[in-house]
Amino acid sequence: MLHNKYDKATLQKKLDSENFKRVTLSFYRYVYIDNMEMYRADLYRRMDELGILGRVYVAHEGINAQISIPEHNFEAFKNLLEADAHLKAMPLKIAVEDNGKSFIKLIVRIREKVVADGLDDNTFDVTNVGKHLNAEEFNKALEDPNAIVIDMRNHYESEVGHFEKALLPESDTFRDCLKMGLDMVEDKKDHKILLYCTGGIRCEKASAWFKHHGFDDVNQLHGGIINYAQEIKEKGIPSKFIGKNFVFDDRLGERITEDIISSCHQCGKPCDDHTNCANDDCHLLFIQCDDCKERMKGCCTPQCLEIASLPIDEQRKLRKGKIKQDTLSVYRSRLRPDLKQILKYDHESAKKMSN
Image (cartoon, rainbow, N blue to C red; front, side):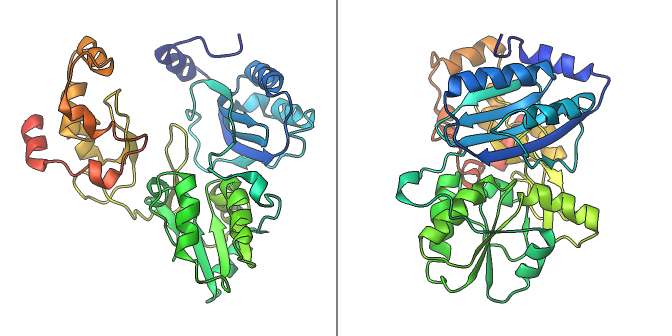
């Protein structure tokens, strides 16, 4: 069996019953992988044998993984990496905050690219990347008056945490972020460019893209925010990053500093806790405080609250399109709706529904 065969409830129960600790980490590498089907099957089998959970994306251009490993199998996992020519001497970025509940199953998927960037890699030198800076070097570079720092993540990530004075593209995807980032500094090619992202993989491609467009002094945070957080903790270096680091697992964030720089999308109170809308046909990612979560039952809008309150059979009919309802258009527009637009709901209506 080279894929998960259990439902979510069973997987969650199995995870909750574990009596050992887990290590959550991420890694990536741009390396050519041939015969992806065979490689994917073998990697799934070896990881599954070690009880590893998480997401692994395999493409011809490389591998990108966010996983959780039983602590007692950590050495065996490192041996697995060393025995694989594609993964040998792999830098690992270990989570700062880890409750061991980041993932409930193992997914190993084949993708066209390890990160969807919309770029044609044949049109520029993807190996001509920027200079890698460690935490101390990055902090020092931030003090350079000629430096411009750009957050290469999406807006829902930078909203809860970012580096001081960083430019924050209002992007929904990495593809958009690349274009917006370039547009922001189009006339500043004589400046020092500092790029950062979650774990470093997006900056590998972004730095090469910036250099291709005529920027000479391009630098990137080595290992991303995850590695930065570990390094400043180990070395006692002050953090220039404020707030939370958004992560793509069930934790949805690692706290780097105690600063709360964002607000609840529904009431405006200081808050940096992301949630996914409880309406199974929505699951919009947004920021919601505990009071609004209780009042709205984890939903993003009154429309979703209304749908989520229906019997399960009625919800299924809606998802299959058997019942026409205008409210569904609120989240059918695109994959990641604009939070600022979608959450302009009628507060009075929400209050009436919660009473």
